[in-house]
Image (tube, rainbow, N blue to C red; front, side):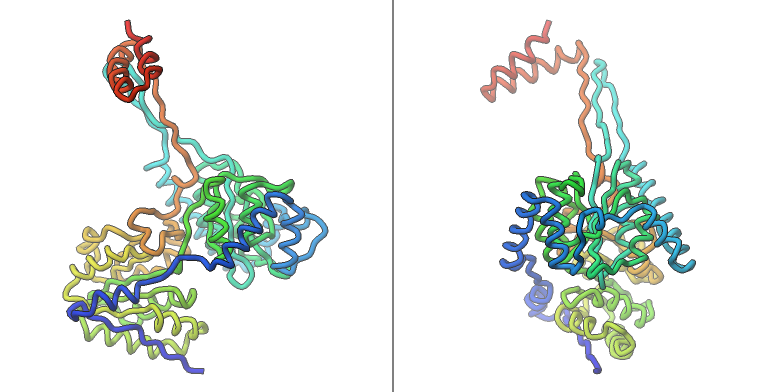
Length: 438
């Protein structure tokens, strides 16, 4: 079957642009009420019955029936065996990607993940103590949607942060294990791994069972049930984010081969039909060339049907008055992935404030960031890049304030604190400070 992809053509010069653009951007993050109720029931059941509930749901949803939870745990020997069994090319690629991801996050830790302190003029010590989380859980999609890259991107920064235990859960429908996912777990230093998925896996990590230990934080992507479960257990444990459909926005000045840009738009559209791919460009002739490339290249794509649905439903080719205007529009979108496909990307980068990741220059395809460039590919979606950051070492650490007030410092700070405490009507606070005064 031949599929046709015609993203909406919009122009900022048209009076209807704002309304048309808003309609194209709209995506409802509200979960289906039936999913929410089902997830609530599963969470409550796992919290109450533990392993028995996990075994029951694993049999029901994944078609994997076993006699005990022990049969759902993957040993380190199994992970290593999977690594040894995959083709040499895949082993080399996994290790090369892992090293780049590790190096980036080690640099990130040095920049923002170290403890610090100083003493002021009266000898009072003030500072911040940074410590890793004790145990985290990483959710990895399984079955047809198997992502070894997600194992690397979640486990390696946790490992670099110094997390004591990294617990991986991954569904294996009908017992089918993805060797590359298991190999990635071995390379990334996963401590324990279980072939459990869905809301029941999130519940087990959040509440703990006799077999699966309770964690401090859960990270990683999943389907609507996983997202709903993560939303509900937040507060009992930490979570990374609630991710929406994947997004790419390309700022192009017309200097990049149009085939490259068309394929970059495909790279997100092929995820699912709700994924969003947008091109912003001041050159109308170039936009037409990109559309021609889309028409020519789409029949070659194995996931042509999904790409066509995504581009037809949510894609857009937008003609702007200038690159400056394109940057302004990009900031209003705050995309997950932002490509600056220009021969002078560093001219435009200072104008860009909101994006999960910024890919500079024609040779920097978003797909390189997904797998092996180094920075994390777990990124904020649905405009949340306005206030959120990529997953990083800092997500697996916590900060404690350090305060050691000297005797001299207590004479100054005590008077200030007492005045403010009396003003708030908290005499105990005031008296505690005043007792340190000479």
